[in-house]
Image 1 (cartoon, each protein chain N blue to C red):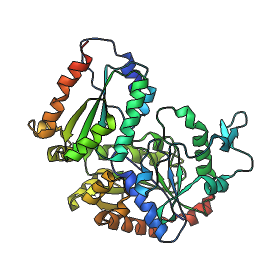
Image 2: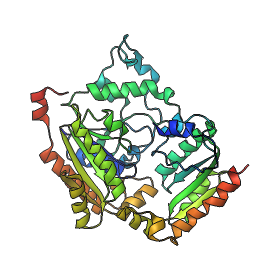
Image 3: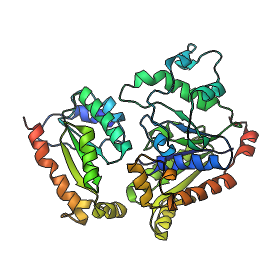
Image 4: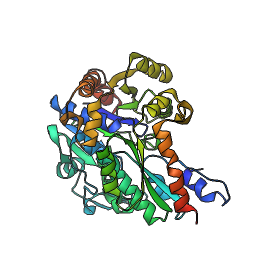
Length: 261
Length: 138
């Protein structure tokens, strides 16, 4: 099973890539759970799923034990049951676990968001391929929100600003809990020099190179998944990326050895 | 020091402060009420960007973050502009066209002003100045 999370500068293309990746991975046959920890809508669009601001009812949780988390899943509801009941089902049978999108009132989503975190932490790693989308910037990644992943894919454009954020994200490798593999995906690449520039700047393997594709801009404007609007070079590149990740970064063996959930 | 701490602690003076907040609405939700005179909400002509922009407008309004102006960015067609104007109704909209100069500057790590001060996008951003003066000079 694959467990991958995408991070990068805001606007680098994480949501378009992660949503398309999840659907193409699912087409290969394995069960795919897309997990979106961004409190603003993004991944839903690229999956082709309706945006839902409050995807789980507050009664999925009860108050947690003293000294523990504020809210925990209610008795009788475990991670598998939660996913079964509350994850949306999208095109290509991808299941989608939404964090809940805020209009500024974080407290109104707090219960559902605690549930989301517990489910992502406790879900059976043998049951799902997991594809995650983190908000733009470094905050969530550095606070350990991608712990569920074996692979952290840092998405970067070949611009100094985007590379600057990517370089900061790569510092995550110093953390004890960091995903065991931290790799780079180059987005909006026009020429070979772009990949070279990224590779040199980050000193990390660039495992995917996604070209500039006007169809993605059109899909964005139409609120469609890139897979549902003139699939072309972008989709081909994500297909290749899925192949690379499947063949190189299926970490089941290592996870079993380390006992990492 | 966080952006919100910085903005709420700067003493009032004749100095103009221009702050670039992180993507999304996180900083806006944490910024103390009435910390700024004016909020510029940058929006691209895509449903996703408009959705986030509308959330930003709501938070900025609730938290009394001054006059709100919408900056319609990367506008390529009349339809793009109309879509944003329709989505933000009563708020003033300043349109910045999709401009290859900005893309080139980004790739070079340079300011677009230094790459071509006469670029279309730069002239359009200049159009923000009278709007800001009109809405904040009380």
